[in-house]
Length: 77
Image (cartoon, rainbow, N blue to C red; front, side, top):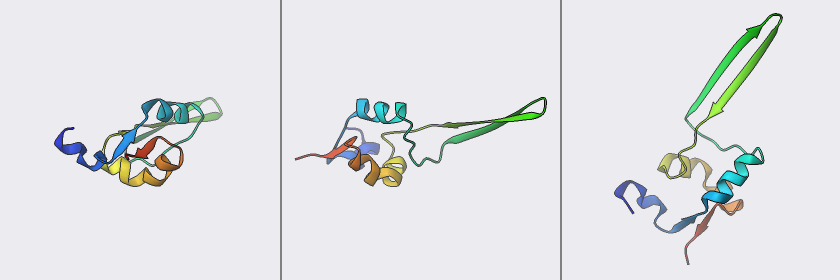
């Protein structure tokens, strides 16, 4: 494990469960997001994009309880 992922040393991460959660519409807290709006005649459309860095310390800290609850992250035995 590289030095910047030491915060994950005691955890197992299931990437498939993470992707399944995203496909079910579950969102996580993140500092990486984009927002756009476009005008189509008299209607305005909004788009939001979230980017997740599953292995980053800040993402893990923001979402630890939810990741554990969903079984995406498990404490190693």
